[in-house]
Image 1 (tube, helix red, strand yellow):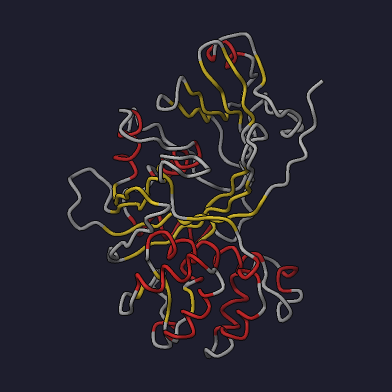
Image 2 (cartoon, helix red, strand yellow):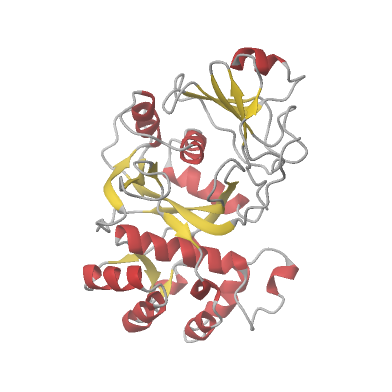
Length: 346
């Protein structure tokens, strides 16, 4: 019998940050995504190319943030619009709702890792074009080092600059849970934000080996050519972006569906004779308890044979190795999301 997994799952947040590209080739998307490659000495997924993000800290949900936001006219009302449903505003004045604190995590980590401060001042707070704002007119290297060493200093930075984190331009895009086969486990909310102009990146040397601004399809093709490694969530979400050639179309889609509660994508890993299959929610073979086993589940058959066992619905990724991946989805998402497209045929 499989051993019941009782690992504690930590909450985290990541940011799919997109910037308009005015020099895109014909037939390509008019935007680039920002990913960085983790340091080789990283304790979690070294050398992986990932979106900025990290673990939620206690300070990210501290009510002291509400006092800061209250200094800006109309911001409290705007904050409530971020929260989902009537229940989300319960106790709003006493503590931060998760819809707010997770956005703070994504923005803080993006500044710590990439030196990009997405924020609004008193003039830009009322902007409604849906694009994120950023500030570079301060000693970013100095403050990046301070905030990286002490997450509570992110609030101090905002106070010093007289700005608020640009929560309103972050749209909830998806949620992923680390498989039960991993020792370190996270439930990560991915947010999406769009920029009209590309900010200057200032990487944190202890965490970041290098970074790129590239079109989603370029990342996916590079991964298939073994030029970089995209973990399954990054591969999946970049493949979703292939549905949109225009940044404005993608931004509007993300904005309109951000009020939906995402189906948490919790992969369950099966070992086949020629690779590994990550079963995802909605697949006919997806188990009732995705946390039932702490080991990869042996099938004794090939990935193609395993695929035939599903009666109708397929939602899985098949991996021959770290670089050769294939996403298979043959039904519409229950949460109104777009399905990923195959970069090999796009």
